[in-house]
Length: 109
Ligand SMILES: NC(=O)c1ccc[n+]([C@@H]2O[C@H](COP(=O)([O-])OP(=O)(O)OC[C@H]3O[C@@H](n4cnc5c(N)ncnc54)[C@H](OP(=O)(O)O)[C@@H]3O)[C@@H](O)[C@H]2O)c1
Image (cartoon, rainbow, N blue to C red):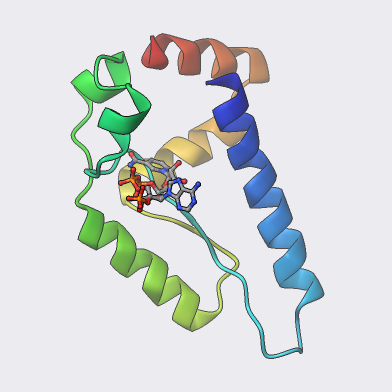
């Protein structure tokens, strides 16, 4: 999961920088950040038995896609789908990094 989440951090930074560099060109970049979503992903990634999956109700894929589409049409560089996920991200911003890493591990075991 270390590699998986590090790539997600990269995609966010890359998308935000790209969105900025493309300002005024008519091309926009929107990075959609979903939380747990009901797709094929959990089966494919083999994460169905994690604490996160067992304790969290996934969001409906169509709702997440709609959030992404709306943000794209508004030209937003980043969208976090779902109020629960937005609140979670805000809490991570003010939490010590060590705590964030430890809690992430706990949920993904
Ligand atoms: N589901 C979640 O809980 C969740 C949460 C956070 C982030 N995400 C992220 O959301 C993104 C989409 O995931 P998903 O939930 O929609 O998963 P998914 O249902 O497993 O769909 C993955 C899609 O990616 C395609 N794909 C996989 N490898 C590919 C490759 N090498 N080249 C081109 N296409 C490839 C698959 O195509 P085929 O069907 O043709 O193989 C499939 O359409 C992923 O980046 C995932 O990390 C998902």
